[in-house]
Length: 234
Ligand SMILES: Nc1ncnc2c1ncn2[C@@H]1O[C@H](COP(=O)(O)OP(=O)(O)OP(=O)(O)O)[C@@H](O)[C@H]1O
Ligand SMILES: [Mg+2]
Image (tube, rainbow, N blue to C red; front, side, top):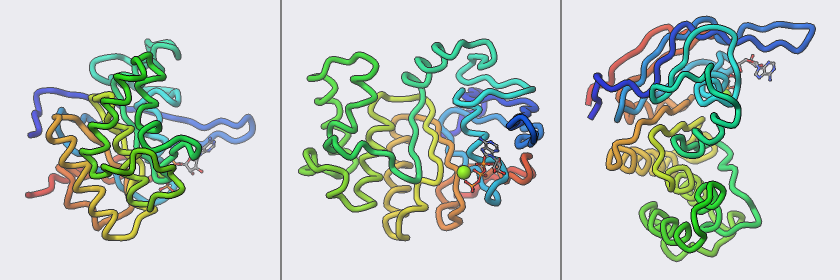
């Protein structure tokens, strides 16, 4: 359930400029947006309008030039790079279009990675990973390498990896664009079910209007600005 009292992400007038020395491009031109606990917010808009830049800024992967950004009450502009890395490792899960699995690691090892990187004991990490691998419907595929799984199955591994450390906020950038329609719907069903069960908050960047129905709200972005926000009736 969306609880409008609890803000997970607060953005006020964020400006991001790419500057390669010769050319300055103002990619985010004053983004103001709040995302609430438990909701699935979709961020949509034409290619190049700044969606990936926006999610990179709000997760501290990219700096920004002006405005305010608070994630779980923490002011990003006041955190060091090291603090941001630790914060991301604990609180944020990422799912990308290209799955980004490590080809030489098995499904279960890929899932366990965010835990082992941040110091969870290997046995404990594998047991938690096995639990979520089963939850995404991949029982029996533990030891498969990504190359031997279908696109939809690889994205399920990526989802399990994104959620295994119980993040508060999950960011998905085009999670269904490499998948056929049926796998895309399956992936969205799964993501929605898991995040609602765990009361996580999710931002999904997408071009795919066939998945808009899974959103609680849709934010339309154009030329570095949010043009309108729509509630999705269920
Ligand atoms: N590192 C960079 N340096 C300079 N310009 C960049 C850089 N990264 C992105 N851009 C430019 O910023 C704009 C926004 O890019 P961004 O990747 O955020 O768009 P997007 O909305 O995610 O697009 P798509 O839907 O195609 O993924 C684009 O014009 C892009 O060329
Ligand atoms: Mg993008």
